[in-house]
Length: 176
Image 1 (cartoon, rainbow, N blue to C red):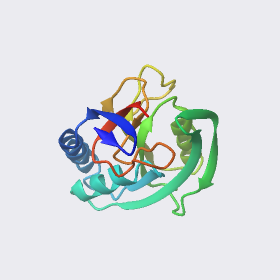
Image 2 (cartoon, one colour):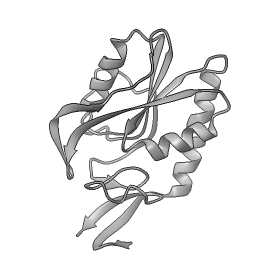
Image 3 (cartoon, rainbow, N blue to C red):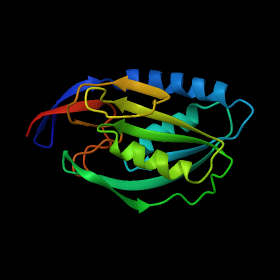
């Protein structure tokens, strides 16, 4: 597919994403059937995934967002900066962290540690995409949508310098 000077190859089709989102929503709905969890989306990348996910839930929930920076272009900077914190009190709450992609694991570790400091009842971590070949984690990810190769991807919320988030599927950039 050609898009504004980029050659893109599909990695995960939109139908497959929607099917998996509904499977994840079903798992969450069963896990929290008698609870009202708070879903914390990681901005900007997770907003499309989170919107689709909460609409597919069969339970009530609350939501909030946190925004961090760890990328410049297609490269991780190796550090995490907090740009926007959550506004909700998560003490003694069931927290569901909703991430678009776990690459090195640096960002999700930062968020998990930050949430644990607030004393939640539980933390469930969900990611749409996981790069198992490069992720260095000392804790499990509760729900993984798809495992992918360690390549840079865009679409369905994921960007390249803030562009291509709106694409309905996940694509690999072949060449500019």
